[in-house]
Image (cartoon, rainbow, N blue to C red; front, side, top):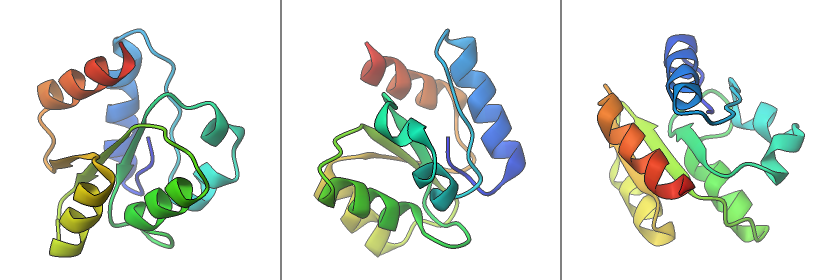
Length: 112
């Protein structure tokens, strides 16, 4: 989970853990990229707009590097550019406030 909002990051991480999966929390795309998790993650849940590198810039960088890890974007302010990027790469986009059932359904589908 990558989100600069602490409450969203912690609650989403707790939700994924409650499903029986490992979950790691990062407060920025840069922190995620500096970790080894980027090489082993089964799914990335990421805010679109953050301080520093945006979620869409992170996705673009990972895809250009050949990483195909499934992505789920979350955002409170979705722009036309965000929708274009998510459509281009075929990733899910949930708008904040996130319905936990929607997130659970996506994570379960991706991780099965």
